[in-house]
Length: 145
Image 1 (cartoon, helix red, strand yellow):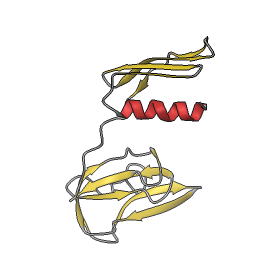
Image 2: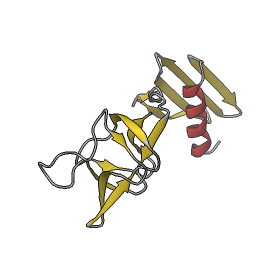
Image 3: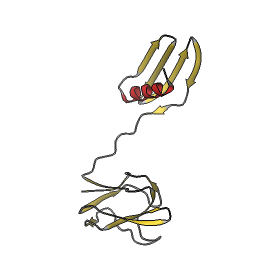
Image 4: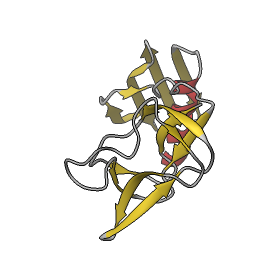
């Protein structure tokens, strides 16, 4: 069994409702136990010789974020800014009603300031990113309705 296959097995067990798992195949034995969404221990024995024990706990995936009717996501990777300049009023805040094409934030990428605009009319419920924080492509920035 390849290491990549073992990693996939760990992911499957972590996502499942199982609390323990043991597998024995030819000269390979894998044993995993988890409690409250964490893998507590895993042992890998190959050809009757102990070869590896991973002590680091792997936490389960966090619960999914609440679903919002409308979300504005980052179209690029960069630094998120809520205002046009330091100390200036934010483009939007919770409760703001925005129109399609209205600037809602700036993402700085490669020293270029990119104005991010609403793709539809909406009311901002929550700002999901922090000012000055690095954001990833597709990361939710604003929740709205």
